[in-house]
Structures are given as structure tokens and as C-alpha cells.
Length: 164
Ligand code: RBF
Image: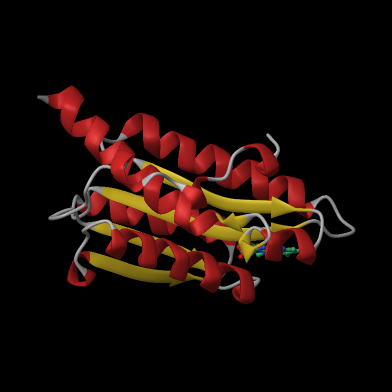
């Protein structure tokens, strides 16, 4: 889906569920850290702007995006969080590694969403080059970290609504 067509960085704050009292785990990859730190910081800023307490946000780093699966899995299994956000950036290189990492992370995080009760938000950006990643981490096309935060807030509210 083209990011040009959907950009939650310009969300309508009146339509976003308030996050007061919610506990969030954010796991982020150190690979391409210029990008992942910007995504992480965007997510934190947006959570704070929507009522989440700083003390209710736990940050944990992992070496690369492939390790997001384990990091998110540990967070989910701890049952300490109302939502988990996984943040990484995979930039296409000259080898098929890109495809394996993207497929692995997508499958791993998807599985957590099906098997456990905690929403896991997919904050893996997958781009052809660094410029595309920069455009999506606070550049021309917004910050996908903001979007992950909004999505987490919406999914926590949905879970509460459906479990009542
Ligand atoms: N991790 C990322 O988060 N983004 C990347 O673009 C990325 N590219 C990689 C390319 C190669 C050839 C290799 C071997 C690893 C790469 N990784 C990348 C690291 C990967 O997610 C993981 O940390 C390592 O494979 C160790 O499990």
C-alpha cells in the first residue's frame, strides 16, 4: 500500500483512544539505528501525547529486525503490557537476505497476534533504499512510529471493547 495514500502521522486526536493507564512495550532493532531511533522516538512522543505515562512505557533494544520476534514474544509472554510495538528497518541489499528477514519477522509477529492476547504492532519498515526509510521516519511521509502508537492505542481499546 502506498504510504502517500495513508499517513496516520496527521491523525485526528479526537478519534484516538486515550492511553491513560495503558502499559506499552516497545522493542526496537539497532540495525539502521538512525531510522529505528526516530521511529521509536515518534512512537513514544505520540503515546505520551495521548495519555500514556512515561513510566508505563518500556523500551528494549535487539540487535537486528530478526530478533524483534524474540523480543516481542518475551514481552507478550510476560503479560506485563497491554500492547507491544515492534520497530525495525530493513533496507534492500544485493542479496536475498532482505526477503528472508522481512518474511521471517512478518510471520513471527503475525503468529504472536494469533496465539496470544496482546496486540503486537508491526513497525517494520521495508524499503529499497535509505532515502525511502528517512521519508517514513520523520521525513516527507510522516513517521511510521507515530502510526504504530496510534494503532496500539486503537487496538488496546478494541481488545477492551471485545472482551467486555
Ligand atoms: N537487520 C535489520 O534490522 N535490517 C537490515 O537491513 C538487515 N540486513 C541484514 C543483511 C544481512 C546480509 C544480514 C546477515 C543481516 C541483516 N540484518 C538486518 C540483521 C538481522 O536482522 C539479524 O540481526 C541477524 O541476521 C542475526 O540474527
